[in-house]
Structures are given as C-alpha cells and as structure tokens.
Length: 524
Image 1 (cartoon, one colour):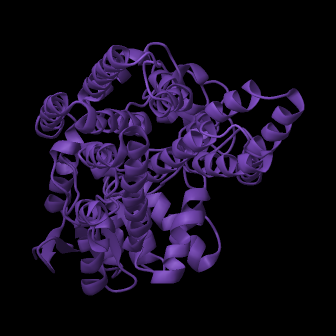
Image 2 (image 1 turned 180 degrees about the horizontal axis):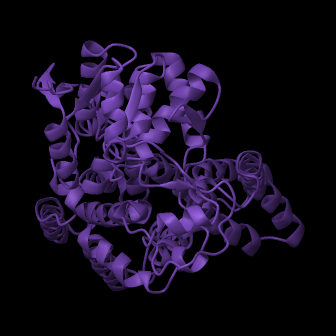
C-alpha cells in the first residue's frame, strides 16, 4: 500500500518532465545524457558548438542514458529513474523506521518522508537530489546492519564503499556518508583487521575520485577544474567568494523557510521523551541501539554536508534533503514505537506530528514550492516550432538556447537566437583556463562583470542575441530568411526588447504563441 501511494504521489508524466524546468541543472542532465546515449559524447550544444556541461557526467551516464537506450529517446523519459529512486526512498524509510519502532515505526517513518514537500517536489524533477538522498538512506540502513554485527567480514565493507562512491559521483558532498563506517571500522578489533576493512571501504571512493579527476583533466585541463569553473569563473575561481562565514546567515534563513529547523526541534523533543520513557521503565541506555546508530549516522554522515552548505555561496534547502529526510524518519519511527508501549503518548505524538506536517505543507514560504507544477511551455514551444517553421528558419526565443538547439536545431539548419542576455547561457562567459585576477575585483559571488572577465581571457558563451543584433535580423529578412519569434518564456525584463521588435517588424501569427517576422512595407 505504501509503495502504491508513493507511486501515485511522486508520479510525473514524461511530457511534463520534458519541460526540464530547472536550468541549467535539469536541462544539462537530460540533454547531455541523451547525447551520450545517441552519439557517445557528454556535451551540450550552443551556437553550433558542443561544450561540456556544468555538471560531472556520472548521473547522466549511469542513470539517465540507460533509460534512453531502453525506453526510447523521448527526452522526458529521464524522469522515470528519478521516480523509481523516490519510491525506493519511501521503502528504505519504512525499513529504517521498522528498525526503530517495529512495523508501526516503519509506517510512520515512510509517511513522514512522503509528507515532506521538498522530497515530493524534487522527486518530480530530473535532478540528483533525491537519488543521492536515497543512496544516503541505503548507506544508513547498511550502517545499522554493520552495527548489529561484531563479526562482519572485511569484504563486506566493500558494499557501503560502493554505495557511498556512487552517491559521491552524483553529489560529491555525499562522500561524508563514509565517515560513520570509518569510525566504526577503526574503533573495534585490532589494527590489522581495521586496516583490511578500511581498504575495502575506501577503495571504491578512491576509484570514483580518480575517475572524476581524470575526467576533469581530460576536459578542463586540470584535475581541480570542473564544469563549474568553466561556466562560472565567478565565484568558483575565487575560493573566498565560493565559501564564506558571511553565507551562514542567509543559508540559515533558507533552512528556516523550509521548516527544517522546526522538524529538527520536533525530533529533539521526541528523542527527549523517548529517553525519559526508557529511564523510567528500565535501567537500560536512554535509547535503543538502532535509534542511537541512526542519530550517529545523521551527525557523522550528514553533519559535514550541512556545514559545507552553510558556508557555500548558493542557498537552497534541497541541499539539506538527506539530513531532513533522516530527521523525519527518526521522528516518525519513534512515535510509531510508542503505539505498543505508550498508546496515549502515541496518540499525542500522532497529533503533534500531523500538526507539524500541516504547518510544513500549508504554511510554505519557499517560492518554488508555492507555485503549482508549471505547464510544459518549453516542450509546447518545441512542438510549435517543428510544426510551423521551415528547417532553415531563425527562431527568436526566451528559452535557454541549449534546450531549443538540441530539440529543434540539431538535425536541421534552424538557428536559435536568444532574445537577450537575461537568459541562461547568454548571461554567461566561459573560462577555458583559470581566471587568476579581475579588475575591478568582484565583491560578491554574483558580482559577475562580463567585460572584466572577457579582458581576463574568458569568452562569450553566446555571441549572437536579438537585442544586440536587430539590424542583422532585418538584413536576414531582406535576404529572404524566415524569422520567427516564440513568445513563451519571455521574461518581464525583456518586454522592452519585445516592444522594439514589434516596432521594427510586422508580427504575423502562425499560432497563439509563434509569430513570423516581416519587414514593414515601405510606402511609395
């Protein structure tokens, strides 16, 4: 029943998913995976060039590309493995909750995770957050298995090493999941046995790191440069802009907006009550071993992730999804365990938990959670362009060029012309080599001064945009080139440019959102 409910709640159809709403993340994961599956290279198209994406290739290659090979090349098929991971996370939550509080603990834990808006939301987008979180849950479950056994063979440590290595390939911060196993391996038994365990545990991570550094060297010229440095030299070429103590305040605000702090407070209260119950009834430890071990994993395995992102320049509560999910599992699992030993207390816990998730779900402050699922305007525009424009047309659009170039221009002579530099990729410069200094120096991570970067050796990612090339567009029309404009996804800040286009050219409707541009007739 839980699996069926999770499937219904987390389902997202492939056409909606093909909108690839989160740019550049979703766009690059899906399109680069599609390119790898069909052409054998991990790249994205921009102005008739194939460039490396922002992100490491492993999620796209290991998870998404096989789906395109098995299910077909519909770009929205990339959502299916994310959905499967999401459902798998609910199953792992049940197993962890069952360890804490029996069957009721499993039921409450799985429902607690399913009630998290962040988990539901990111299960419906082609992103690495939910898959990486689920692998962290698997690592936690393995940690409990190891802690329940004192005679585990050294070879068994290869499994958590592999799980952690795969999670780290998806999101490098997930390397932290290895820490609980490291501490456990070196704490018990003799030195020789501990060393053997460490070899099996760490080897997969060493292999993963070697593969990643080799990829960086072959593509970006240095093991320590990545797609982030290539596409965003500010802030990534400047450590003090990427990580700073001044970021802690804004990141804490993001956590408050996600109600994560409220959930942590609830978990602490539930743990305190559980401790009190055990102290009153027995002379045993304050918590059952399984509860203690899950808490250990949260502190050691996800604590470094929290610290990393508190210092990181970019704020988003999804970065804390793994500790948030584990906190929900602990809370639900313990309340479920009370149903047998303290029914009245369990009833109170259920009511409090229900109120907590009502607050989390109905008093949402995160902007992207407040919005309903977006219609597939991007996919709709693709279908309109393919239907109404010739294969050598110019298309002016407010959609990021990587998406349109891959889906409508890759196999034709169409040219995608972004309407302005307010669009993803058009607002970036690329840095094939490290930018050592800038004048004037950037003051913040978002203080991107294009001219300073270009003087320092960076290059335009997109050279041709409509707002800067109105005369060239007019020339193309005079020469007989068909020019169209798709009015979906044009931002408010580009309204002035749209008005200028309307002033200079005639807009001939070909559909509700697609117009052909014509030169106005000259009076004789």
